Image 1 (cartoon, one colour):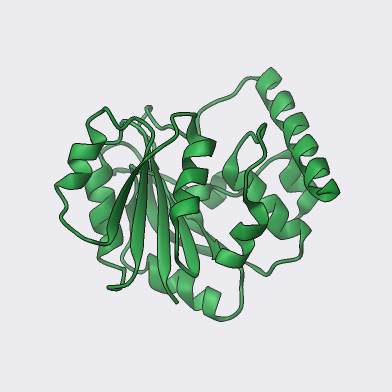
Image 2 (cartoon, one colour):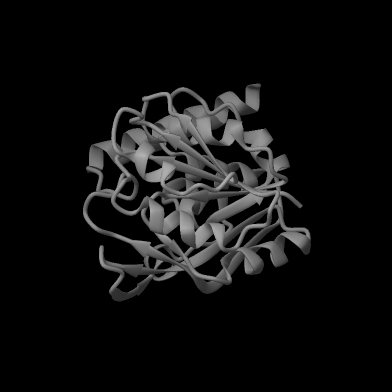
Length: 231
């Protein structure tokens, strides 16, 4: 199965080369990484260009924020299995093989654990699963999403059900997870940390939100789900 990695970038020049190298070492010759750069006039383009690997496909993003940027990356993916990636993490060397083993067992979506680190990759002695306690409950995940996109991979058939993203969609990973659960796709939750999740204060995703924003996000998500059911 061909693998595509959908990587959404924005001012990612500081860490993106390290991230790309950790991914490339696990991919086959026919696999690909789609880097959608939401600030193509910035320094990320040059940082990516320093890695002369034909598996890296650089595309300009739409400049409309993280959800639309991931949608752009996903629309360029040609693989049978798609991994989501942020620009500033580090994949551990057994990530792809461990996730693909679950896909080959028939799972449509895989969520794995990650070790949380600071900007210098020093352990903060906490994991993603410690923080979010993921499960496969639709109601619980509608109330509080437990699926972190950079820890997700899925079959192309699932993402085809999720695209195009609704206009008011608050977050892409939340949407993909909810539709997978709602439509009864097989999901695997891997307790083993397969990535170093770098939290350095300038992350594009995973930032804090106010109570008002949290309420609005959930109302928007409910609206998106209702619209998708009508469609």
